[in-house]
Image (cartoon, helix red, strand yellow):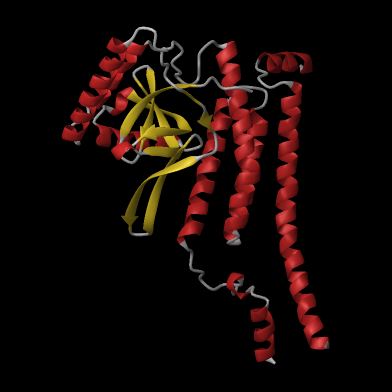
Length: 58
Length: 277
């Protein structure tokens, strides 16, 4: 099953291994990017909170 | 206390970017543009995914499209539109470019069918002049100006051929298509404000269609015989002996390529440089 599957896919392979790996990397990078933009919002909240705290403790 | 806080935050110069959660935010024209161009890029990604349909990589392209869409939705919902534009500039555009070129090359080599209709044979000089003459005569609108131009061109070129035989043969300039640029070719007022129409290689099929429609109405050539090839940077002669330099759209018209001057809709024959990797 698997070998026939692979053979089938090989026939329609357009990208080289390197290009395919690049595609994987890009996909993973998008995940990380999404996490980072979500995280940056949390960081912003933290910074604002910290900022306010500092002002009040002065 | 509040005054002090206001002073501090105001002093930081950030208040312009702040917004109160739940409050309707005024969207400016630039931000609308960012959303529109982001949507366009998603469409291009989808088209790219379709081009890879049936290959072993289809699922990955689908994943890339979905992930890009997720980022789009997230940033739009947070009104972080500048970041969205930046994301596309730094990621999507490069991605689209790379994998479009790979597919183009693949199709050209493996199926022997060129993706873009590129005129391969170098047109002979007289042929070009013939084409040029046709171009100058066809547009019905600025008829007087154009026919005068055509007369001048004919006079000039006949002068050249009769002057001397050992003059160097002039070939049509070769232009290189620019992947990233987009050109604003029309501005229109509509109920959501000023709309600018742009054309570039990453434009959607609808946008290219709209551009060709616009063009057909301006230069009087049937839309069916025209196709959009890309944008290129070049200098062309303009009125009163001046020179126009800038990014111009390049179109195919029955087998030959022409750069289009958007200031007065004149066509200049060009050859498109073969894409390099």
